Image (cartoon, rainbow, N blue to C red; front, top):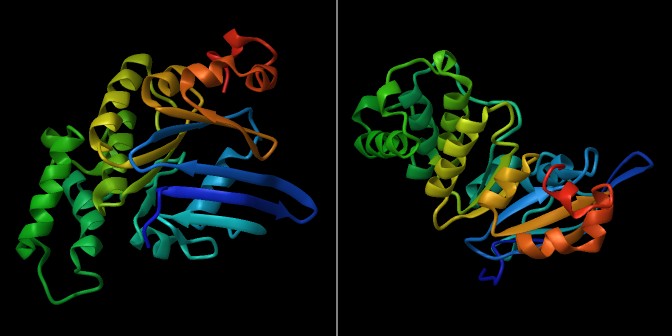
Length: 256
């Protein structure tokens, strides 16, 4: 099904018991756009990501991926339709090598699924794709290193590699630079730009330097609603956004 939008949220709502967390969120992201999702703590950003990726089912509303409804589907079904995400906490196979982690990520997309009749070393296309990813995330020298022995920044880079390994067209990154130094963050921004060329990107981010350095557009979530969605300069000047961030334009560049 063709669509103008890579990802679209229509009046999305989520309640836990009597508490409504997402209150009619709507958003339409075009193919290839890089969108940063920001908002005060408790605004519902992670819940929104969980609804999009299938960890939670919405109470009402719709989520469309390339024009196809995915709300209510299981995470693995959504992944196979072309959406992949990373998490706040690094999620890798610690006792596999960097190369093996990436190879695991490409197997399903290459059609191998749950086959036990082939030796992985003989899967030349999977091995070649894993090598390409290894180069893309700049961990060539860590080919045979166990993932548990990587630095924190390297583990995050590996997780991004796994996230894009299946060839998804829409990528969700949840606080990808959290815990990194300023120099690591700068390098990681460039890495994300490189590996998501041609893809649609949504990222939850608290570092406003990352937001303004990475995003084509910014979606501001406050009390479970998207109150602004526009280019960074327009969002910075939006009075509603300024009020949400303690009432000053300067605060928008410091808070998240």
